[in-house]
Length: 342
Length: 171
Length: 100
Image 1 (cartoon, rainbow over the protein chains, first blue to last red):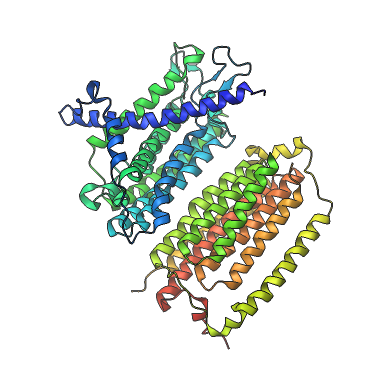
Image 2 (tube, rainbow over the protein chains, first blue to last red; image 1 turned 90 degrees about the vertical axis):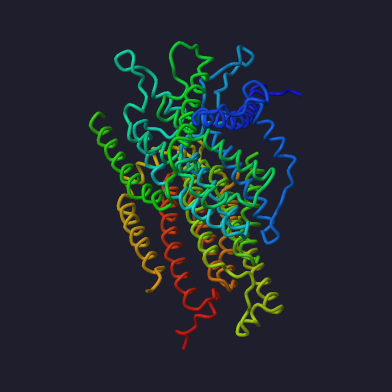
């Protein structure tokens, strides 16, 4: 039987990427608790493993052994499927993100494979489409739990997500205009090179407003502070995942962190030059990608524990009355810039 | 390989659509229709049209169905529905039997008609492959069909205003 | 390679299912869902024939059909909400006031 080594390499790469996402969610749990602790002038978890590094694994084991509850009046099928939809959408959105140039695995392969799951010529739209499917997990969770906190939390959360999708899409459209392509790999390779020898040609410098809009919309899309009113403990118990326990709750948790990682990874590819960076050889360029994604994730956590939470009507007003016009202005300015420079 | 994928997606689309029409719970109907849209998006990808597939997911499954879902949740649509006596004869057992026979005859006729026409294989791959190119779609949209594009944007504005006015609570 | 007939037959079946839903269901929302099924069947025909002829016009037209379907769904659902507020029921047989 002749097994094609390229297919084996692809499958291995997909396996590695999947595990990397799961481990990054675990890493995010640890980083969040440590950063939160140091911001609040305390130490955080430091018992389990060195500096608490094994704390996320302890959390997962605890969650796995908890009892799985379901309210009697909850719709069984939708209640069970909602966290699955959230988690699947979160993982699937990462499938078109590239994180390195082609590699031949140090000569093991004849044909080099690019470091990503797949590259579609409409990659940016695929990410947009799959993140808009993630809304369903939240809506169904809120509805099927048949409890008032869940329903309110679910409705508010999904309304917030679909409102901020508009600004998200327009910020993406401005970058697509600059790059002339919808494929993330081509957008990153268009950012190669330097101006005047030392400033990298990242779209961040051409689109500062666009980057700000994208990060705001991304934070609102992932339901993180300061836009996490639907999950605020003081107002809504726990919003749409009030009635969930054990592995279903773990799936929602996982979906939230993987969504954060995806938003950061797409932001790096679009605005921060992806895997491009100085001093490293071609086959190590993915290290730059990880560094940039880590910086954005640190920024996410930092914002959560520093800024106060927006009230729901303030949140919606910001999304519709400030962010959306700003993204339209950004799009028009970018169009004028592209026409003028040619 | 393509044929297997086609049969899989076609089966999912047909079964989901049948269940949308057939079963009673409106919430399940909406979710099943989303599944059907996903299967159709898969078929578009098989047809070398990833742009149509992605727009299908974004617009249909991501926006229109969320609207339906919100309305179903807001109105708390009842699960059962009663059949008034006027049409009970139509949907009773006799009516269903006659309807099923007629539908079957119609279906066989359509399938037979569509398979004897000489449309078989697709155009040369080079010409057919190029429908994947988004730049081509963009230039067709904004050059040949620009009037329809602008008219559609006004249509959406009118629909938006109309929906807000219609659904407003009277004071 | 899948022949074009297969796509056209599938589209015909989906359209028939949608039509059956519009005629047979006694719930306004399910009627609107069946109309969406019919529009999707038409979209499939457009994309399939567009691919067959090597022209992007198929996808462009589906873009317009989707947009019009969105507008129609929005207005239709607004009407359903207004009707529901009036009569507290979603059965089309309750709204027969204009019949002679």
